[in-house]
Image (cartoon, rainbow, N blue to C red; front, side, top):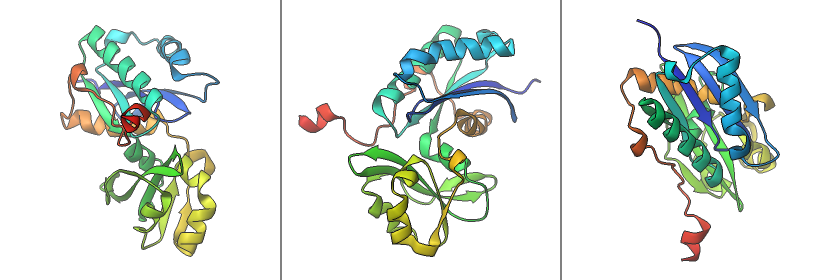
Length: 228
């Protein structure tokens, strides 16, 4: 029996990426911080990746999307693209948390991980994780809040990762002092390859869904909802 072939799309942040993985093997990953919208590059990106790897879309066993939290427009583009590909091929979809995928990019050093994405407006999307059995498990719920609120939960030496820690690095150091450890700068952009590792685990546990069930996870209300 062949290992499952999964195409994963991550568009929750300004840096977008896609990855093609077979089992535990990364076949290809493309990462780009586009000048325009994710919608401008995503389909050509996918076409190029499949062409370069000699992969037919029908060969893919499942499609995975990073569903959030993150930038509303980016999430909608990624989720709708995955839904369309899955509907066209009759394949299942997999939903991956952006914060858990980000935590995957922090080395398993036996320390808690604080995954933090810049939510703008003086807030972050964040959650704390602890590595167990090769994967990050949540220690706190996913939240959108001023960074101080998640920092108040940090009681021990912790690895910080994500573009939110780059934006609020000075505040983190002031608040956590010697408890703060920062992942290397190259680890901060959210990557589809990391989300794909979670997607394969979910696939093997049969935690898949139909395209109609796949929805973005915003956490924060939209501007229209707030105004209403």
